[in-house]
Image (tube, rainbow, N blue to C red; front, side, top):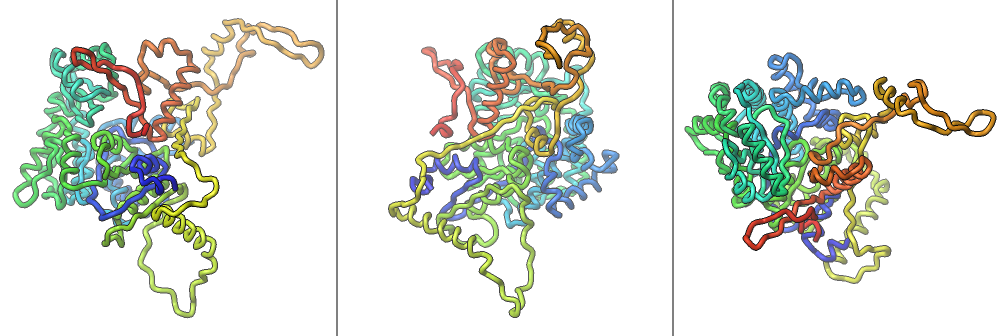
Length: 577
């Protein structure tokens, strides 16, 4: 209500993190963005697969294509019993394999795209990030879904087959792009910016020794550089040997010119359209493996072409973050994500629907929108798109009385909104002058990682994390000869020294993997001063900010010589405002 009264863009952007959206004026052009490797997680789209026949059929189609290639259905690698931790760990390892990850992600991307289409949402333009470019080509009609699955399976296989004396290394760097370029110029050997993602974040790749030297150089200047767990230095010349075999595979596919404008990662510009373009497209797709991803240029090309609504179509919300980082200063920007494990499959998809409806997209939006609001706090299953049905017979009138309460609620909403927009005085009791954006974080013992996106799901599934302490740890506890206070059934309490493993703790919840430096960007020299409790408290605070959609960025101060030195972590300006 306060946001309506003030009509402030910053207010509305803050509310989008809670699933509340506002739109007005003429509907703008929309782009679908398809994520790539790194966004995958076990049981991605499981909720939608259970409730939506269209999603189930998409995975069934993927299973038919991939079973002869992988030896078993693709779904078996994605969906497992979340209560069986051994199966979950095994599935996680399998899903990290490039030849499995790539078709799994394409299947998820296309399942969400098809579901959005069933609700009346189709893009004006498309772009993918690395692997996601194949999802964009499917959406644009340049590749069939089956061909795309085979192509990315071959792409992953050929990339994995590259074997050299040095397969290279990659690292994510969190610093202004100009600083990254300046520091890389000082590194000996071959290292390049492989993913030009945003003005504040990029990925470097190259020869192992050169990348390690670059990480040391960045660290010495206070720049965060995090090594990535990849088998090869992708999007560098190191994996160039995979380009020609991939081109041969693609040449057997039924590749066509895209029916809608489609961004090419190699150039950041649109693919050629029209006749006699297939050979050029084959060249670009073959080069894509070893060429930097020009994501900044691609986003700017889309915006310059009239796109104002950007929708991440696939798991998690990495690309939404990049859109906000590159185009966040644009007042007319709308950026949405459609699936995230923390939000939930149904709730995050429903939020995307609300954001699109508020932006004037979908069925029944041919005329310009009046100022409108859409909001969601839904956690149950998203309803299936309504199917055409015959009108109810005349002898069976609808009982409108049952909708009385809902009608009163909606009428009150319209009345208050109209008062605010017209500037009339308000009589609403309990109105607040503040908007509070909340986030939550949860660390759990007994899981592979202490802080993990699946933690809430573990709790909701009723899992318990108490397990047997291995004997070697029980022996270490006994060797400490801990003195404890024991209260016998009769008599006064006495102090007893523990000297035997039978007297120590045998069951406990033990902490999993946790690295505050690598996972949360805390400087190593500071982390060394933290005990475990302090480290976890800092981590859970940062994770809660992430959950609320409030990022922390490293600020820089300029010296008298014009160079920039890291200053401190702070809220980004637009979030703070």
